[in-house]
Image (tube, rainbow over all chains, first blue to last red; front, side, top):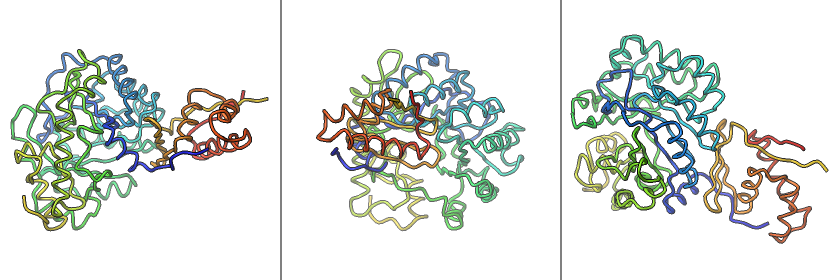
Length: 340
Length: 91
């Protein structure tokens, strides 16, 4: 029997980007959260029109038909959505690789048992410190560190794939290295994100929590883990081609950061129609293509420094321009090679 | 004759788009890409087709003998079984 040769994930991903298949789905189940992190960009809307379990099930089924492989449930705190576990079970039953991004405080023994059975590709728990005083100061909720650590222990006991995540903030700076040691001791991946964003309602107070350039520079020197891997497809990102994000009320966006306007709402239009017909999706895809070409031109960009077209537009007014945090990463990882 | 059916285990995530199938081993994070024929076989096995029936139908669709088709299908099944990505049910 003859056929095309087997291929790896990178090749498959590139083919999906070429065909504009929404492989990677991000679902915000709720914008509500039980923590009060000062650096959080989320606007708590109350989610009066949050989609039901059956509506989400239908959306996931439609996305599967379109070619979706991976779904990440986030928030707010996704476990505040009453049927979050049922939805994850449903997604796994469809063949999705499921990811859960949580603060861990609502993840008790029952939820851990359920997750062990569901077998998600990862459960990402945010740690803002390696001790209660630092973590709880960042989250604004006393006891949140102990609850997150207990959740980590429950998942590790059950061999659920745990990932630690730490936004680089002034709050977490004093214990970043200690969190890294924790991850190493546990043998789990540790993801750092350097991007503190303005709030969705436009307020910029969160930005005062951004980590200092000196700290990021120091960490990059002492912790190779901090450097991000280049995008598998060699593109700026998959916006408009392989990623889609949906908010609690069914508004569809090219990605979680590209949300100055919605591609449509699932209450009125199917995801297939939105994905196929949205001018905004095509605009985002073209922007990502332009960003990739710009990065490649004249050797701009630095391997490992990930470029976000949505942030470039927000901060620099163009997808073909450096924005502050990208420039910072270039500085950390190597000298900039081109001019804007 | 005993007939063999396959079901995915909880360690497998997958997607098929056109002639391209990608399989994710959630235990090891390894990915398996299937070629056109492998994709066809995988899809039909997941849809509940028996290994033996599927092999017989491949004889008509491809230029292969029944023995060769059985070898090819069983090879794919064995590879998935070895990784713990599918379970076999003999009926």
